[in-house]
Image 1: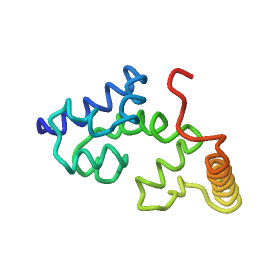
Image 2 (image 1 turned 60 degrees about the vertical axis):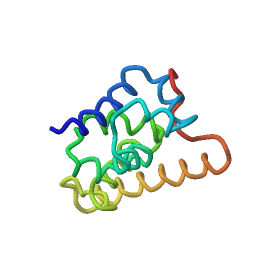
Image 3 (image 1 turned 180 degrees about the vertical axis):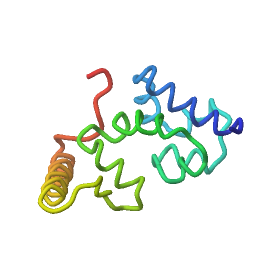
Image 4 (image 1 turned 90 degrees about the vertical axis):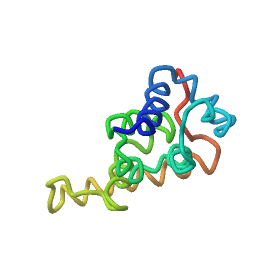
Length: 130
């Protein structure tokens, strides 16, 4: 692990360890990230929670899994995380037939509900400390 990967993981670890830091990050991401020795690419990966790029960079998927609902909101968890990690497709998770159709339908319903809540101001990222 390079020192730079360590810095990315430290940002995520500190988000999980003290979620109030996420609000500081949201207020001014660049200023917040200045405290860490990060490259421009790493800053972008963190700002966009780019799971594929973070994984390819060597960042622990356990840390990204922990931080995802803190930054993206719990309505999108865990299925959107899986979609992002699998090139935009939900893995079948060994399910076939009606089970797979039912699960995917349920997931789409939650995604639509989450999008509507955000659009009408009743959703969004998870509340820190809630």
